[in-house]
Image 1 (cartoon, rainbow, N blue to C red):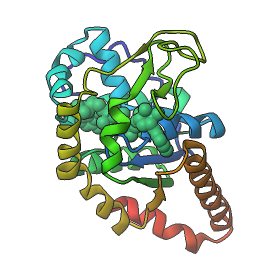
Image 2: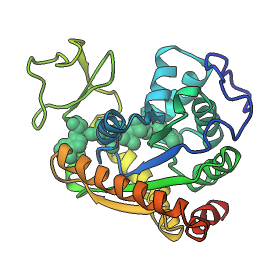
Image 3: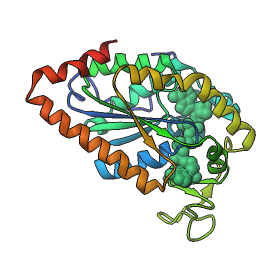
Image 4: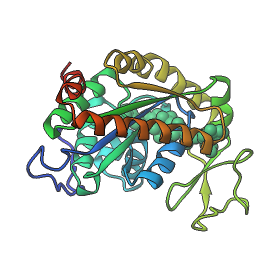
Length: 261
Ligand code: AP5
């Protein structure tokens, strides 16, 4: 696809369009530290949708020292963006797997207009009809504080905050007992660069999805459970609208057309 080896990723999708037909796609937008990973985890638990984080996929490649990981390393370390073709290839391979059949939550993707357009091409192949884009709105002043205090469990990626959501035992995950680590790119200089990159390349996606009628804004300054309850309400409301739309062919038209733009 892009010259890199994705051989480790099994490709369950042999006939495009068959797997996803009724799958639900949720995109979480927001700056670094907005709570995308935290919310994706909570929504996945409640909904059974698969949580797909491009940051986690890239870090997994880094750990396994794959070609993709070696290529991505300098971009991640400096807070820049991994090139679009690499990320698109990785995402396309991942969502072709059968655990995405019910639908999935994209955390950290798309991050550029080129990625958003690439995702639309993928959606057309899979005939996906149900897309919700949730923009997590947070005050910029909170981002650095959230990220410098973040710790992540080594085994399963459970997310903590040293002040607001500390583990019971220092340095140990409450859920699986594994060690808690700080991400190397969670130092203040790199965080500020990630925020700058977000402002230049990712913020324009808010207008992009708003123009397509797909964007929902959620205030994400409250407790994670309160934020998650808001998102759940929104998704439930959209699901019932979709059910009603199924009885009225006219109502489904704008959703399909918006994908083709
Ligand atoms: P990625 O891993 O996606 O990082 P990010 O976008 O910078 O986002 P974060 O994971 O830092 O924040 P988050 O919004 O998930 O917040 P979280 O829930 O953890 O990407 C890393 C790098 O990979 C990129 O810089 C880039 O190089 C590369 N990359 C990834 N995807 C790419 C793509 N598509 N294209 C190109 N390159 C790509 O929460 C943060 C902290 O806040 C935690 O401590 C948490 O406990 C706390 N918190 C969360 N919610 C709340 C709340 N409501 N109240 C109080 N505290 C909260």
